[in-house]
Length: 212
Length: 99
Image (cartoon, rainbow over all chains, first blue to last red; front, side):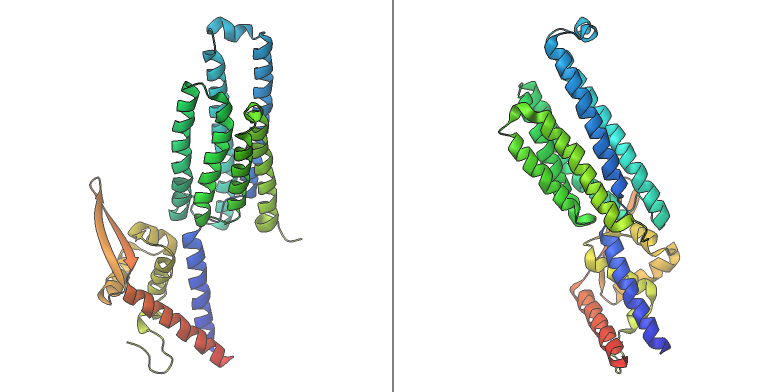
């Protein structure tokens, strides 16, 4: 009987190790919600900025620079700031969760996730940078969505697989946006904002909620 | 090496060796340090089990350099894969048999 329990334990060990060693499972749903809220705030702020630019009453900006460059740098700055804040918040919630579970956050599987998201994102960033230099601003938002979606799908093999659906939704929004270039901000808000929040809530509900 | 009664492989009686094989079944290549972290064992302990598994021909060792530091990674061999799956099916049979 002791022998049997031993072997059952061994099997349980094997299952656990196979799961834990191949997938980064501490990604928190709150990370998605936080990133989504950041994106919505950034999109709203960008909308305000664009409006004021169109009306031509952003005196401070115009004083600094002439032509389209100032707007471009304002937008780039917003994008970068949003990315940094969203990433920091996402990291924070995932860190808290991995602490609770007692696993190292910067482990083998986390590296795989980051690496696999980063490849499409970096090449996408390069692509978008060049597009902006050629003046294809309408394609920036769809390109962001598409490359991000590809990154998520690419990394989904190394974390909880549901993130794949978040990736598909970004691809779909990005693809639609290709034919509606003037509405980039709305698609961007829907993809990076709303979709992240929905994903976060679903994942939290499925994996993190304390059973009541 | 195979226990004639249950078909269990003696090599896998040890938890660390079983752990190493489990991880290698789902990951192509894993480094020494990653094993250490995942299995929570000491250098010496892990190294000795790695030597055993390599001696059996169950795993392959790859050595390379990152800067000046050596980076040792491991992957499973065909023989290792077979031995491991045989061991698992023996385990399953045994547990079912006792039930």
